Amino acid sequence: MKKKNRHLIIFVSIIVILIFSYFSFNLIMNAIIHSNKEIAAPNVEGKSIDEAFNILSSSGLALIKEGEETAPEDMFGLVLKQTPPPGVKIRQGRVIRVLIGGDKKADIVPNLIGKPIRAAVGMIENMKMHFDAFSEIPRESSRQIAKDLVIDQDPPAGAEVKAGSFVTFTISEGPPLIMPDWKNKNIDKARLWAKREKLNIEEIETDQAGTEAGTIVKQEPEPDTDITKYNSVTLYVVKE
Image (tube, rainbow, N blue to C red; front, side):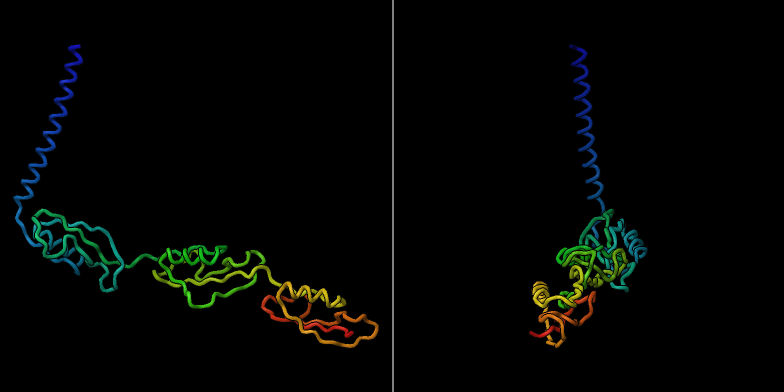
């Protein structure tokens, strides 16, 4: 029992000593700081880092570089901002934090391929790049990528570009519409196909002996033509 009490007394004594030391240290440091001369913070904005260091050192102040920020070319390598600001009353020994002007590193263009339009625009804006919302987005047919998804972009994914660069992309129209072979087929089938594909048919009647009325004998364009961007096709039909 006596041994346990002795350990407890030692433990409490250590805690008391640590607390006393902590408060004593703070009192001493505050006394030292407040004993330093009060001065106005020198203005080092627009100075090089070396010039700023020399100015602050001669005033009994320290300097810490906090980082860089995008700036006009004539401010590269110069102090953009300081904290505390110039003219503020501070005591010698204080640290002045400075922000240096620099050129922002190149941004990497994200991969937009296969993304919906809204997602692609969001990715561009999140990277602080620009998208021309006032121009019509080009569209092309694609066998690999579903309709309304991005199939191409400029600049390509992974390219390094300057901050604020424009990025454009192309949207898939889905698989291309291929002209079937309508020769010797009945016009009614072609009409149903055209209605489904939202195409117009220009029907031109023609005579052809020995061929049943309503049979297609010629077509424009030819079979297997990509007619994705066509509004209409022409079929020559044996008249009734």
